[in-house]
Length: 602
Image 1 (cartoon, rainbow, N blue to C red):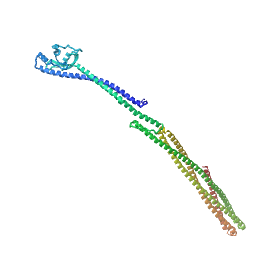
Image 2: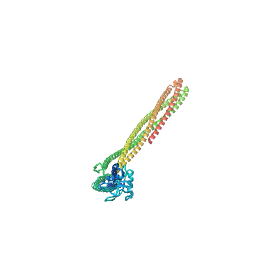
Image 3: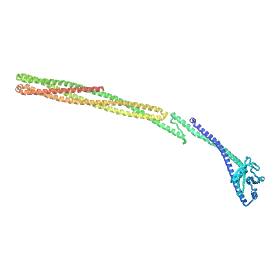
Image 4: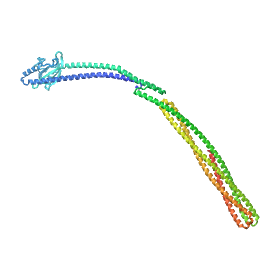
C-alpha cells in the first residue's frame, strides 16, 4: 500500500506519526508524572511518619531512662509521682508547643500537663472519634516493650487532628511514659509538596511544550521540508532522466551531488548509460562485422557453388572426353581383337589344312616312287600353301603389333583418365576445404549474431531493433551452414565417386597391362609361327628343288615330314592359344566398354 504513495507523502506521514507519537508520549509522561507524584507523596508521608516515630521513640526512651534513674532512690508511690511531675510538667516542644510527655500507671493517669483535671483518674474508657480506646492500646504497647499508635486527639486552636504517640515502660517502676506529635503537619507538608510538584511539573510541561513547539516550527518543519526536497528533487530529475533513457535518448546528463542512495542510483544510471552506449557501439560493430562476414560467406558460398558447377562440368566433360577416347580405343581394340581372332582362326584352319597336306605329302612320299612329277606338283602346292601361311603369319604378327599399339594407346588414355580423376579428387578436396572455411565463417557469424542478440537483450527496449537484426544475421548464418553442409555432402559424394572411378580405372589399367602382356605373348607366338612357317617353306622349296634327291633320301624326307607334321601340330596348338588370348582380350575390351558406359552414366 505504501508503494502507492509518493516519497514526499511517506515522509510527511512519518513526521506526522512522530508528532502524534510525541504527543501521546507527552500525555503518557504527564500521567506517569501524576502517578510518580502520588507515589512520591505516599512515600514522603511514610518517611515523615517514620521520622516522627523515630524521633518520638528516641525522646520517650531518653525520658524513660532518665526518669527511671531519677526514681531509683525514691521510695513510695506518692514521692515517685511527685518526682515525675517535677521532671515532666514543664517540658514543651514543637514549634507550636504542642509536644509534651505523659505518664500512666496501667490506665490510670499520673502526669498529663495539658489537662490536669484528668490526672489521678482511670481513663481506660476514653476513645477517639474513630472509636479507638487509645489509653488501653498505649498501655498494651508499653507493657509489650513499647510501640507507636496513631489516633485522633484535640489540638489547641485546630480541633481534632491525627496524633502519633510512642510509649515505653519506665525501668524499675510500674509507670509507662509517652509523648505524641500531631501529624496534621504531615498533611500540610504533603499538600505543600504536592503543590510544589504540580507547580514544577506544570512549569516543566509548559517549557517542554514551548520548546517542542519552537523546535517543531524552527527545526522539524524546515528540516522535513529540506529533507523532502533533497530526496524528491534528485529522484524527480532521476526519473526524468530514466524516462529519457527509456525513450532511447542516451545523451541525457545528470548532475550527481552528494553520496547518498539517490546519488548512488544516479551514478548507477550514468554507468548503465555508458555501458549501454558501449554495448550499442559493440552491437553495431558486431552487426557490421556479422553483415560483412555474412556477405563474405555469401560470396564464398556463391564461389563454392560456381566452383561446384565448374567441377561438375569439368568432371562431366573430362569423364565424357576420356570415356569417348577410351571408347574409341576399346572399339579399335575390339576391332583389332576381332581381326586377330579371325586371323587366328585362319591360321588354325591353315594349320589343319597344312596338316592334311603334310599327311597327303606323306602318302605322296609313299607313292613318290610312282612319279616325280606328282611329287613336284605336291611340293609346289605345299610351297604355295606355305607361302600363304607365311603371309598370314606375317599379317597375324602385324595385327598383334597393332593390337599391342592400340592397347598401349588405351593404356596411355587410361593413365590420362586416372590422372584426371586424381585431379578431380584434388579439386573436390579443395572445394571441401573451402566449404569447411565457409562453415567456420558461418559458425563464427552465428556466434557473433548470438552475442549481438545477448547484448541487445541486455539493452532492453533500446536494443530490441538490434536483437531483430542479430536474429536475421543468425538465421542467414544458419542457412549458410545448412547450405555448406549440403555442399559438403555433395562433395563427399563426388569424392567417393571419383575414388570409385579411380579404382575402376586402375583396375582397367591393370587389365590393359595384362592385355599388353597377352598381346606380346601372342606376338612372340606369331613370330614363332612365322619362323616355323618360314622353315616349312624352306623345306618345301627344298623338296621342290630336290625332288630327285627325295626319291633317294626318302627316309630323310619322311623324317622331315614328321618334323613338319609336328610343327604343324605345334602351330595349330599355338594358333588355338592365340585364339584363346584374343578371345580374352575381346572380353577385356567388353569389360572396358562396360566401364566406359558407367563413366558416361555418372
